[in-house]
Length: 88
Image (cartoon, rainbow, N blue to C red; front, side, top):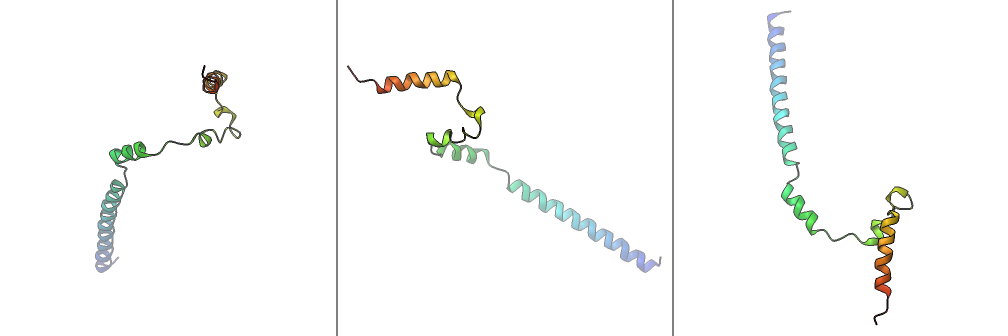
C-alpha cells in the first residue's frame, strides 16, 4: 500500500469514528426525551373518566377466566335485591 492510500484509509476510519460518536450522542438525547414523565402520567390517569360498566365485562364471552367468581355474583345479587325492594 502506498503512503497516500494509507493516509486516506486512516482518515476515513477517523471520520467514521467521529460520525459514530455523533450518532451515539444524538441517540441518547432522543431516547431521554421520549421517556414518560411520572408526574404527567399520574395526572393523566387521575383525570381519566371512569370506565362504563358495559365495557368492563364486554370481553367475558371471549375469555371465561375474566368472569366474576360465584362469590362475587352472590354478593352483587344481594346488593341488587336491596336496591329493588320497595320502601316500607
